[in-house]
Image (cartoon, rainbow, N blue to C red; front, side, top):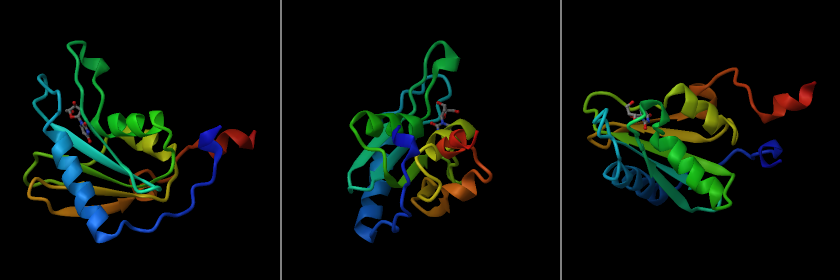
Length: 148
Ligand code: THU
């Protein structure tokens, strides 16, 4: 099972990769389908091989079926054969607040390792970076299933 593999600690993305990643998250936000919340979010995921997969939130008239931008990006990457990630950038329109991933997205991210970086941005482009381990401490993951 892919999730059982060890994920080596990734190096932080080089500056040009990071700038592109941040831009791709903003661009993805412009595709958000969020007629109910009117809260557009974009995410861009950098794979270990240097490719970027982006995603937006996709809502539904049946509200509970809405999907966050982060999980859209992850599902796109996984379904194209990428399971090792270096970083994700997330963008929203919030002016004063760094956007943070919801708990469900943190758990889905964690499936693919605890040692990669998540860039939380504000609308002005400023950011802070957190390791997945910081966003979801004491997490449950694929390794735990081997312990019984
Ligand atoms: N949303 C995301 O896509 N990512 C986040 O990090 C926070 C929330 C979406 C879900 C929903 O479509 C809208 O934002 C309001 O919660």
